[in-house]
Length: 252
Image 1 (tube, rainbow, N blue to C red):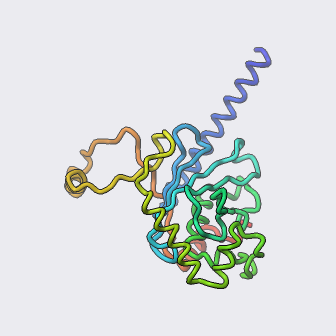
Image 2 (tube, one colour):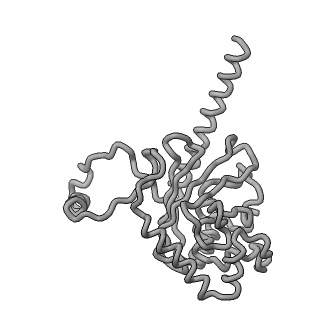
């Protein structure tokens, strides 16, 4: 076998192995049975994930924020952190107003494949919205992180000095997210999470069938919907769940 063919075969085996590991990450998320946050690998590439979080309490209550997770090319072998990018700028100390990226470094200094998984990222996303003030404190000391360490310094200042103004700026992000909830997908991928406006003539009949004994007779869609993967209703709940799974301190 020539060298070129050998290299091609080895590369193919590496990609297949990576695909199995990414599938395992998705299955792990399903096993956690989290709520109110959805994430699924794109159809085109396992290195691109689509996600959406519904927030039901706190400063960001009522919001629906979309995000993408970009995995490094050699995931999970590299120590490089995945990248989380929100659909639009969200006013939060950990979210960059220019790139819309979420800072993961307060919890993940580097990616450790034996300790970190994508579901940890989802839990972190929940945590920063459930408790913005707690998210800007050092997980070990409880002291505020340096202002220069914030992804959005203006949001950091307002959160520390003017909670009312911070809440108003956060509210603008919430209003935008709800207004654009039903926008057409920006990418042509069957796994992109979409929402449909309520239509009584369609959805009332569907609900009756679901509630009936013949719910299992519903036709299966061509593309299975993404799975629900996370929910944090309060800081207290977050702490209770972390006590059963993995503490934020152990991720450092």
